[in-house]
Image (tube, rainbow, N blue to C red; front, side, top):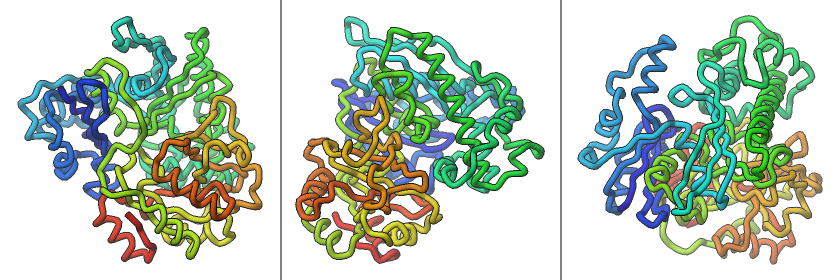
Length: 493
């Protein structure tokens, strides 16, 4: 029995398919098909990709009536076509409306996407996001029973309007960026600012750190008075990042204290994408797993996991649309050696917001002009950092990985570069890099790194997503051709 998991209706719509044996057959983002960033609705071409699977039931990632009740209580307009899960399925997946449907709690879907893809038999699960139905923070204990079925016990939580995610989104808006979309840019901007007044910001926004209670509802943005009206964008970003980190670490301390004999952390929700904050998670837990799609899109997989109930067979994040054919190692190597930059669109697309080698723009990290060249291609702000992808066994020689991060296979934490002068293209202004380590897994990107190292003595490449700012990542070969023609960068398949 194949289960179709769905996340849709708010932002980052996605579909996932899980088999009766726990294999993840497919997981893809709607935005990659519609070409509309953070698309809320399921696109017909995404549905076409799942038609190959015999779907026998549907799992929905949240409980719509609870979400609409919260909207009513908070003074928002009701969405009359989204009061029931059947309405949501009818709107998004008309062809599947006759199948049995289950719906699950929003935060529990986040939790299951993380725990049931992890290697842990038992874990503390922390979910922090902007808002679910009404939850904004949840702490669970999770374990498998003797039959291999996952069980979750909620230990603590916080509810709307008190939300770490909404605060950070409000500060994103305050810095003239797009909330619910460009929080990652705010994180990168933070390194350029002065955080010395973060405690003043903290005193004006946080009422109680231990309970993550705020003084205002930041759902509609920051108030018209406060230190944020006095500071530059960069200083606001730096201060907001510090406030977020202190709040997150207080949640992690609470989670550790509630489950003090558990050393395994599963961390999910949109805030888990803040890799700058993630660098210190090892101070609270020894073993860390963040599924590489911890936001709402990943909850399509979480809903399917809850219906399946057992451990999913997680292999890697290459779960989306397939561009068939062998990984073009030789031609990529030739292009990198001759021009220093090239694109790759090969194999199955990554499930998650970060390119991991199958839909990537790759470059030589040693060139002094590479960062500016790549930024020009991607139409990005020049202050933003790029990530290195490196042979995993050599990562310690070049990067100071934080405790708890023996590897960083999905770019989930930053590390200080030990040799920044040798690799200027992948070092941020604060000396850190968002590292992707690649194990000996036979993947295409691994084969390319091995070939690149053999020719150059350099074990890493710059890796950024194959897209232009404001657009989704390249999905199919037609997208790759468009990118190549518009931006004059060779994209190999």
